[in-house]
Length: 72
Image (cartoon, rainbow, N blue to C red; front, side):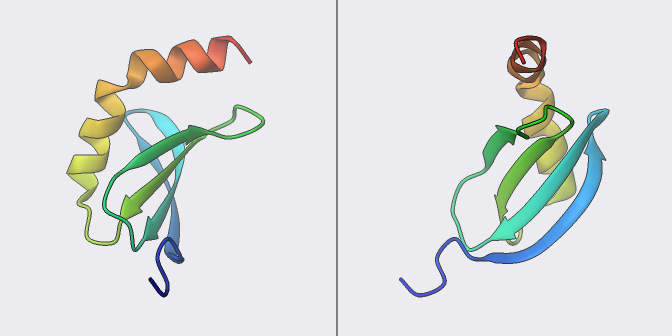
């Protein structure tokens, strides 16, 4: 598959009160990571994902995010 997973656009936003880098890619699912320094989350999302869907995704995983940030 040519171009699968290639970054199409990158945006910095705050999602559910957490600084985030959003990378739009040619993928099917949303992926969540914590940056190496713990300063923000990194989301890889399908190219047509709505901001409200990303906000909901982060809200539902807030406990996981906070636990990972505490352990860093």
